[in-house]
Image (cartoon, rainbow, N blue to C red):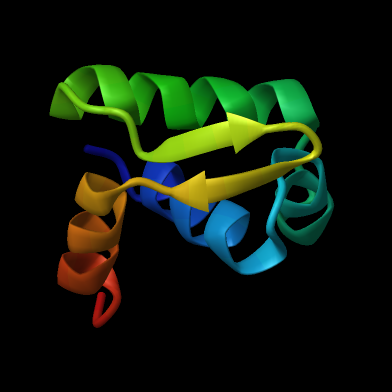
Length: 71
């Protein structure tokens, strides 16, 4: 798990979409999407329910956020 992946995860949650998170982080939308996908693959579970244009945390995503929020 890389810090940039966690930054992308938190930004998507805060911004409400991958596109908005990209703007917030000054990264392209495809980069943020890839970071989230890589994080999900590494963790072995889905973090977000994707419904364009917004995303919603899964239960496991909420658990992860609660764990990494202090970081």
